[in-house]
Image (cartoon, rainbow, N blue to C red; front, side):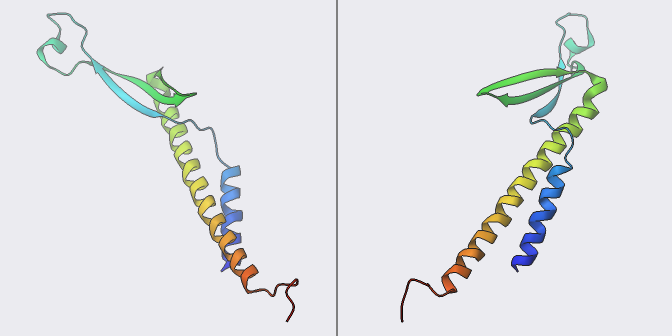
Amino acid sequence: MTAALQQRRREILGELARLGELRPGTLIARYRKCGKANCRCAAGAGGHGPSWSLTAHAKGKTRTRIIPAHAVGRARAHIAEFRRFRHLVRELIDVSIQLCDAELEQDKSAPDPKRRR
């Protein structure tokens, strides 16, 4: 079992090394009303847009950044890569805990050299 866990640990570390650009956050499409009385958005047509914004937490603050329409695909890829990173880190921690537990069990079953019979 520990051999399989060690192999999975190596695989995860390899996947982490191959990660691309990543960024945390949420991409949101916003539709806004312009305020002109004779515009279609005033009649409840949903507003103008979408205008894309990326919201993320950094250094204890929530920051929002406008993303140009041509860069939305790239921003989505960065966010997906960040989510993949978080998933891999969680899996690495789980595998590491299992390896540590197996090591402790192995130490428990080994004879204590300080203890005399």
